[in-house]
Length: 211
Image 1 (cartoon, rainbow, N blue to C red):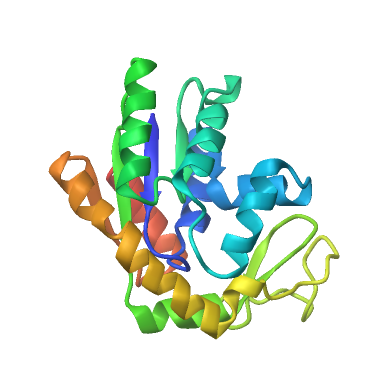
Image 2 (cartoon, rainbow, N blue to C red; image 1 turned 30 degrees about the horizontal axis):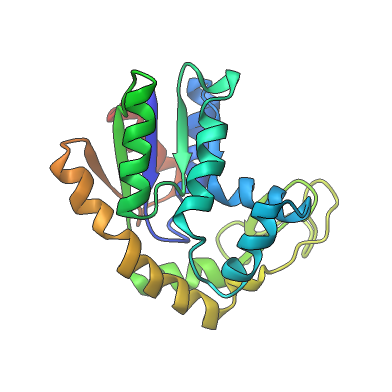
């Protein structure tokens, strides 16, 4: 099974992808995680990506495509995977289609998580991240047991791209470059829309019914 989880930043697709991954024993392949590792290790891809990400801009297609092609051809992804944050542009979607065709496989479904801008802003600005295990909390919706501390003991922080000014830029970039994918995959007859203005559990239940 091969799935794409599509939607604006802060919509909760990463949370749902993690749950779906555990339930179906599929690798959760998140563009953001791959890029953060590349930046931490200061690889050539990481250095190129850093300035774009910190300013709320999308990393160039050719960089992302090369990174993702290597990952989805890894041994653990042979039986399927969940793509979270990829593709983000029509060019990336077409490149993914070509990669899949070369390997004799295809996407089973693209799940589009929809949510209004005001709610998205609230969700992202209140998000806190653990630098050690990369767990994500929210000051209102999913606070840690101890304020400012992850369950693993890491000190939670607000990412630079989660501050209001950068969030506004990220949403603008999404609408301009990523939202056309909704039409693209709808025309491919593999798009399913998920109302993300619900509880995490309810969204997970609805998602499971559609598989």
